[in-house]
Amino acid sequence: MHDFHYRQGEFYCEDVAISRLAKEVGTPCYVYSHATLTRHFRAFDGAFKGTPHIVAFAMKSNSNLGLLRLMAKEGSGADIVSGGELYRALKAGIPPNKIVFAGVGKNREEIRYALESDVLMFNVESSAELQALDAVAAETGHRARVALRINPDIDPKTHPYISTGLKKSKFGISADRVLEEYKLASSLKHIEVVGVHKHIGSQLTDVTPFVDALKKVLTLVEQLKEQGADIRYINIGGGLGITYSDEVPPLPQHLADAISPLVRDLKCILIMEPGRVIVGNAGILVTRVLYIKEGESKRFVIVDAAMNDLIRPSLYGAFHEIKPVREVSGGKTHQVDVVGPVCESGDFLAKDRAMPDAKPGDLLAVMSAGAYGFVMSSNYNSRPRVPEVMVKGGEIHVIRARETYADLVRGESIPEFLK
Image (cartoon, rainbow, N blue to C red; front, side, top):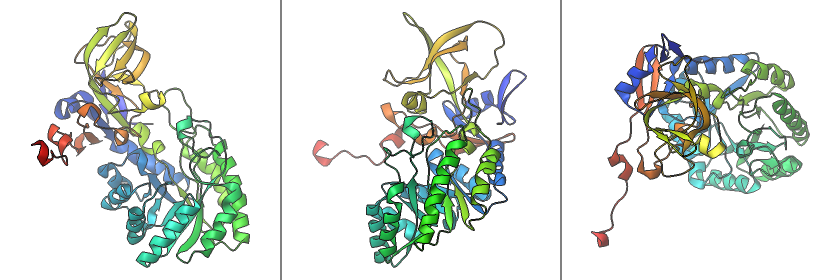
């Protein structure tokens, strides 16, 4: 459920007409609903109310400072994968003791920053990382709390680019090596194993892979405990999907009903890393039609948003519903490609999509763009990145200004010999 809707033929975010917002802020722009974000977080957090837990919002899905501040005020922690995300999380007021640091390639500077910030734990992906953690912890006089990330080799049945729990994946420690990695960790003076972690993929629309993976992990937890491990945290990762088109993903409560009984008697704190399920349908990308081009065999709707603004359709072949900001009922539809100005054949927001007539100047809302939207954007073709806006009731809050041409060259310089 989200707070984008038609009202007397006009598309709204909460109590703000998108046409009004586009006039004030310009296009393209990302728009997030405060009410939707709040409701989605509370639905996820509340589903696990009977289980000691930490919700660590997956910042890779959306790392805007204003949005993170909202998460912090709701009691969220953060799942981070870089020093930059740690900086953002702390800046937004997320407590360090609710921050977990994941990722296969943490460098020494990032490890040092996280240790000095006293994050809750590192999700460790390899023996090489364990040794690097131990070395930096020794240099800084800290003890690194870690969770061993287990790769349970469970097929999440999602896009291969966002499947992370298979044997061929770069992520995690294979299940048959976990005890060996624990022995290594136990031998390192500045490492403390406090948990286990798994994350099998993103945009999952069935709870079965979650359950199968957790059961496999819990078997290993028992073996670790027999080796003397003091496992206090079980991190089940994230990945719960949303509706982009006709998917019918489980609700957070369905996930809780399936997971909670499995961990109830373990006397551990459950950590979850939801991202898309909270922010995905809480955001849209607003774009304006520039031209209609009649090709030899296809009609193109050329808009001012492009693959550098929203790369998911080009990268994953992902579907995003596109709605006219002024409602069109009845009338003829056309099969069109919705494309942007970027100089690439892969620059499209939709292909072979049945859409009502559009004309230059019309506004379109690209739905379900709150996750992996702006956060994956770029300056390709030297296009300034677009603004992000949060709507609260009838209020418009710009939470990231539109970049200028001057922003594009900030930090660059021409060497003296070329002047």
